[in-house]
Image 1 (tube, rainbow, N blue to C red):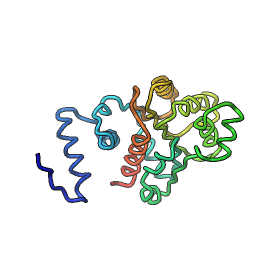
Image 2 (cartoon, rainbow, N blue to C red):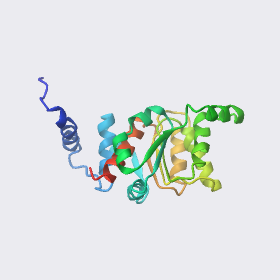
Image 3 (cartoon, rainbow, N blue to C red):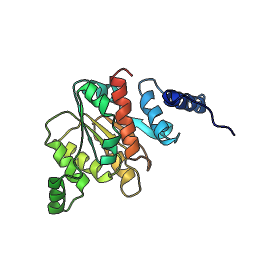
Length: 209
């Protein structure tokens, strides 16, 4: 088998063509297609065709918020590093991760919680429109659910794609019943790379890419 020659600036385009071909007759609604396609592109996992779930008008809501200068908050620095900074800057948005902050570590230790939970509390105090992207810690989703239920903090959108086993499935289902717009990967699959990919798909859509 010989490698296919593809110009460097055409590799992503060619990858998306291959994804389309492999999907065959399976169609993705146009509103959510860029998000699903980028999740598959990032992971080479076609299960995201089936397990990526969207609340009604989730993408439209996200694009409206992004165009007004949203703050993306992630639960890992890995996800933060994967978000396209040029797209953020172009749209007047910011991206933050609080996991390594000293005050977050102190609050988590004092309250007997995870840093992911303490990070959600810190995000609640921002007082700005937040898109919260979780790719690692189900405890972040659980804390977000608690904050939503108490009326303390209501993110504009929750991207809930933690990967793993303990409380992963349950935390995602909680977010899907919270009444807040969401993009969630149902089941155990996900990861920081998927969280960043979804953020980038939304940024590129908002920028007209």
